[in-house]
Each structure stands twice: as C-alpha cells, then as structure tokens.
Image 1 (cartoon, helix red, strand yellow):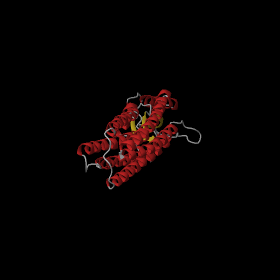
Image 2: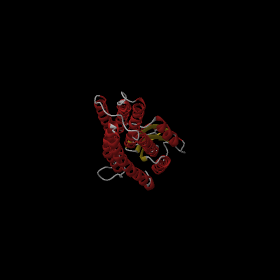
Image 3: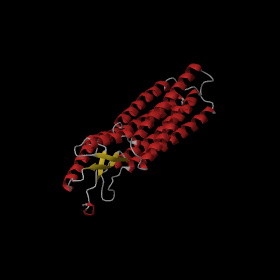
Image 4: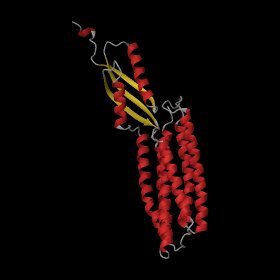
Length: 301
C-alpha cells in the first residue's frame, strides 16, 4: 500500500498540474491573439481541454487509492484504469482537434506570426516537458496508466508547441510564402500524439481485463517465495493489476507431514515477505499442496 506521504505528494502533483495548465492556456491564447499566431491560439484552446482531462485523470486516480470496503472487497483500483482509458481517448481527440485547426489554417491565408510568439512557445515546451518528466518520475514505481496518460498530455503539448515553434521560426526567417509553416509542424506532431493515445488505451484495457504484470515481476515473487525455508517448490504464481495495486495468487508445495498450524504460519511468512518487498502488493492468496500425499487408511498394509 502507498504511504500517506506518498499519496500527499501525488495529490500535490495533481494540483500543480492543473495550475500549470490554466496558466499556460491563458499565456498561449493571449500571446496568440496579440502575435497573430493561429496555431498558438488553437494550442491554447486545446490546453483548456487539458485542464478538464487532468481533473478527471487525477480525480479517478485519487478514488482508485480508496481502501477496500464491504461493497468493494478488492478495492477501487478500476477507477485508475478507467481514468487511463479516458485519458487515452482524450489524447486521440486532442490530436484530431489540432489536426482540424492546422488544416483549416493551412487553407486560410494569414499573417506571419510576431517574433515574440517564438520565445513563448519555447517556454511552453520547457515547462510542459518538465511537467511530463515529473509525472513520469512519480509514476516509475506505481505504473499507473492514468498518470502515464497525464504525462503524455503534457508531452503532447510540448511536442505541438515545439513543432509550432519550428514552424514560426521558418515563417519568420522565410518571410512571405512561409506563413503556414507552424500549422504544418503542428499537423505532423498530431501523429505522435495519436499513437501514444492508442498505446495508453491498450495498456488501460489490459488492466481492466485483469491482465498480468511483467514476467520479471512474476519471477521476482517466485524466487522470493522459493527462498523461504520449508517451501519445497512454488508451482504457480499469478499476478493481476487492479489500479496500481497487485493481487497475487500462488500454489506452494510443502512437506506432507506439516501441521495446519505450521502451514498457516508459513503462509503468513510468505505473504509478509512478498508484501514487504513490494508496496504495490495489496494481497496474497496462497494455496498449499503436499509434495507427496500422505497415505490414506486404505493404502496402509
């Protein structure tokens, strides 16, 4: 389970995300209007949807951390996966909106953007890529599809802004005939955003369908249990994700003469070792099997 200080850190990161999105939205729209950059205006409008998306993503992630209760004995982890699906689809929608505006502006003659739109876009790229790395860094240990989606919303904004910055630089130095270079740049960037939206949806649906974790993680649990004294063999290890949490099911072979009390104590020892080694493990279900069945009365000579 996540510690309270880890949860508080994630909540503060979510609040920072929303504040950054609001600030950049206003900066891009105002600069775009004054500086005649229609790509920047469209980017600012798209940032408004980022605010809504970030709110949904972080609220969904917050609810996914709620502990299990009577109605939901396995917790509320699916909220995280659903938020990830939403985040992926919103990335695809953002790519479509940006592509639409880019094509529209390519077909509509307009002025060369003002020079000061270029440093604003460079600033946006730096801030958004920094936010993306910050969210991805916080997500390293928990592997949340929702947070990965939010990180890619920041990165997609950085990519489109970088493409627009290159286009504006071309327009400024190229002069007449290059006014639409920033729109072409934004259009090309849409493909990257679209691909990542699809990948995030794929990962989120994998979790919704109780997909397994990586084989390396399964092998680590297998080895940890196998190294505990009195464990003869570990036959099966299954791990499914629910939100950021893991639920482990395993079959363990023990000596047939082991008593119920000893078996019970061993099960708790295995469970404790696994949960202590990985804070994402919410529960471990262990099925004990004898390495060799004890003879029944009918089998005795």
